[in-house]
Image (cartoon, rainbow, N blue to C red; front, side):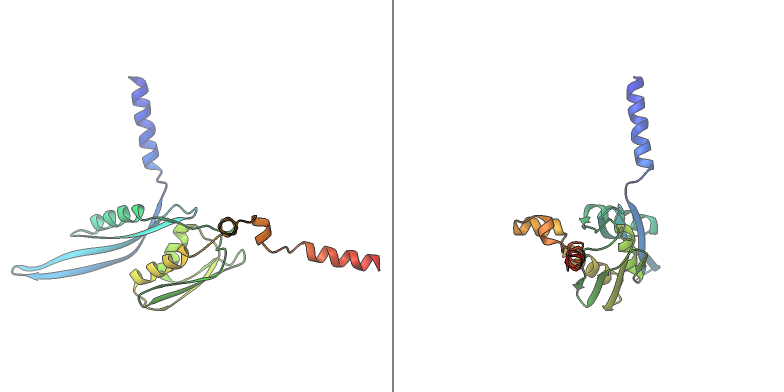
Length: 192
């Protein structure tokens, strides 16, 4: 009997420390005029991520704001994607994403740059766990389109491991060799 209680207690602790962080991006209030007045409804847009390379977004509608946020969070957790990160802090390469009229450009950045991105894109990068990125959105400023365009671009990202696997090579064969070139030139100079 005591063992069962201990197991239950552990389960509660796990629920208290959520594995996903969520960020409310937008709330939209809509009204419907009816015979007795107006009825209000709310639509919420939420981005959820584990800050280790997984991110998703969801939207929820309800008569009350908390219920709309809850629905959006649940949908976001079901639609998560995994994105490979370089050194756990930035993107592997530059990329573009599109959705409808929304266009975004995302570029890798050196350490210490931070997240240089606007509004909804910033929420996606923070929930993804990216620390250094430069991004620009052109076209639609609609938060739904901006988030979808950002996720469209992030899905296109490939890591050196993925490229090596696809081409049947080793990761070392694909990555540029930067350290070998200067050493060879110094050895040649010493011999002469």
